[in-house]
Image 1 (cartoon, one colour):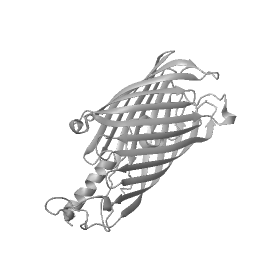
Image 2: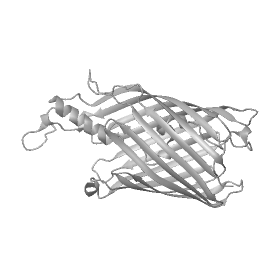
Image 3: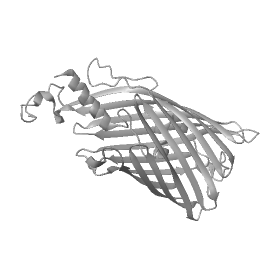
Length: 344
């Protein structure tokens, strides 16, 4: 078949499968820490471990929507506190990401390991650096797609050969990422984190064709996360996320608001979480959730605001996250590692 048409077809498939063509994304980027940057691995002020799930269903009004799922766990190890009461520790994490889209079942499976080192520079600052490595497998079923070779002058005839490889075709590669965070926490009421990361540092090749040279370019990302405790019952959490790859970019701005409703028998607070975000030029994002002690559940809906809105009736994406954080049994009652706003 025509080579140009072939490349256009795969390009459209990739666009359907990830954030702006080559990568997954979640509107709750703040609840997918290791996808955001490996420097976030086990970056927790109070807890020793974190286990989470993310699920996203996007463009359900389009004939074939796509679904993204992730599961992750990160753990704090080798924790030390020196004579100046400054902390340092190592974070290790594992994550799995899965994505499926389109008539051709274009699928992605990514298995990732992350490592981060967190060093408290002073009583008010902390530096985190991280690295990640991942194995990625993509697959597509060409038998479920139609191509120009199957056009009979009136319609696409699936009985004609499509000129492609038969059945499910797979490709795999390895990718490396890195990141760094600088956190500032002058008191119990304010926490500021500026982070940056780069995915695909090694620029892997992703192609379904022998000899193909589709190189995944590096994807720089940056985040600004601020927590402000305004009183005993309200924490405001504005944040900004930016990512770019090739000629595409994504900018999300907004804020979460956490309100204390009460506390359990272990004096752990129950929080109501509300939020509003804007993916500039694309969607308005409404967020709601609740935290019951160590368990947090959040949901959001993306309302399409772009030129796609007339074609999907404004339906964007529905997303959920579930996170459990805790301490190792022998660390109960240990003072938190660094200052960060929280309910008491």
